[in-house]
Image (tube, rainbow, N blue to C red; front, side, top):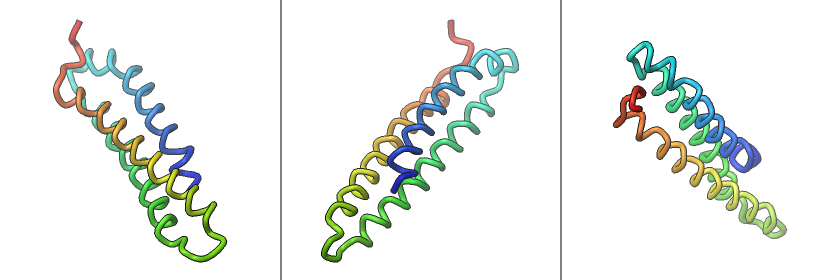
Length: 101
């Protein structure tokens, strides 16, 4: 649960910071491959954490699991929102050139 609850948003924020830092070098090299690699890695990390939270959410069904089930549900939704944000940050890399002024 915790990787999706804390790690997924941190991975999305790290993706944004790294992408912004790599725009100038990508423009000078006229290549977006590094930007795509960073985005793909961040999205994979977020999706893996989200999948683990979803599995935990589905596994909690017994009595006394109410709080853990709620925490797993919040973690799964947080991971899903982070995946959406990560994907949204990757889309401009596909569409725009890093050299736009």
